[in-house]
Length: 492
Length: 121
Image (cartoon, helix red, strand yellow):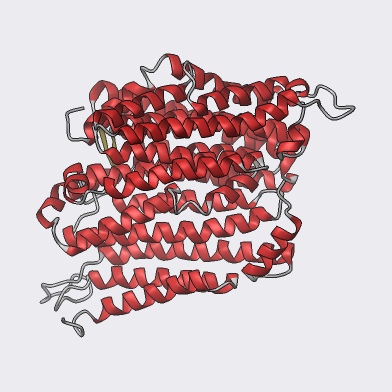
């Protein structure tokens, strides 16, 4: 039965297709294969989510070796949710990539690009699906290594230094994670996450387990780019090819957030992480600083791509704020924002990629008059921006609404004000773009030159989804709430 | 404190901090990769050390032997070594490209070139 093997197919299909893309060489064959695979991955992720919602968590023993000895792929509502986000963004970005990449990369690099893209997709899906701690590290490194390559492909030479900086920071983060996993193995003798969760309480007070938690948390926050460990992110996003920025901004940090959530809640348990160790006292302040400082920095950027990158660091602050509260509502808020931000920021970066294709620059002054020369791309940017601000009828509003509810539940008025203040800062940086695009005249002789449909349609799919999930939240918020219930110890 | 008994672990900590310090303090990109390598190597030793069982031999079934060392950490770290090599190779490849683009592999000189032109777009 194919259905029983969905968890492994989710990984094996893109993994096998990646080298095949390289073998297909120049021309459109590599792209077609990558496209087919990304759509298949989306289908599988959808099937898994439907199965999990219907029958509860799915467990798949790799090679029929029974867990906890063998590697287990375990899919519950949270895994399936993250898988769906990653696969959906991959499936939307790939149709877009063909024109965008043809413009930004020389022809002999195209096949290699799709190979690296599929490997990155494999790694991200693998992190989200596996129930084995060491396997998680291996998939994390697959996705990281391929993302360094993807970022380094950017046209500007600064892409190279950005990729190198990310390589150094990312490797330190991943090595911290592997140290943490090693210390946990030392204390418990197991690598299976469910088994770890059962065994940790007996040794919870040993220094080994404490050190393991510290290493895992710092390593994961480095990959998340939570303030003050976000140094690698702005340049990496600003100089990567447009399609890569959109894909990574919508998926890579989200999967890292998943890693932290999985370890803090499932492996260590909320009682240990939040009641005994009071980690919220660490996470919440950093999240608040991220929201305020990075939104402010975003206002002063003249490169719009870098502006959105700083905005991403701020938005990560919102996710971590919700998760850091440690309550069921807080986690729902964090997870639903993870979903919503993937759509809106993916859409914004895709819109920016359309602009880069026609204008050849993403500097603010180059966008003058874009409302007239590229009305559809500019309008997509405006809708995405409204969602980022959190205007009602966009999904950003849903995220902020739940987050404010979660803070008020705890009586934390100050935090609720921070969320609102962050939205005001977002108004400021989005307005700078809108002002230039709509209120300034286009340069003399500029004609109406809209981006090709193959790029506009994916952009509008994500922007449309941002609006759709602002009205119908049964999928986004519904699954986030189920996942939050499981994480805080309730029945799914 | 049982320093001789924890000899391996002290080495791990010394190597880890040495590598980490090199990554942070050195501006030469090659030296950064060297530091990263030392940092990762310390983790390899950490894993290999934890596989040792007192009085155990190599984990190959033989007559008259009842205690074996734990082979699992060794296998895990083989994977991590492969990851480490891939990272080093990619890092060095990026350095080659950086040298071709900037004519230097010193971080401060690259930074100066970036800010001088402010080639932001």
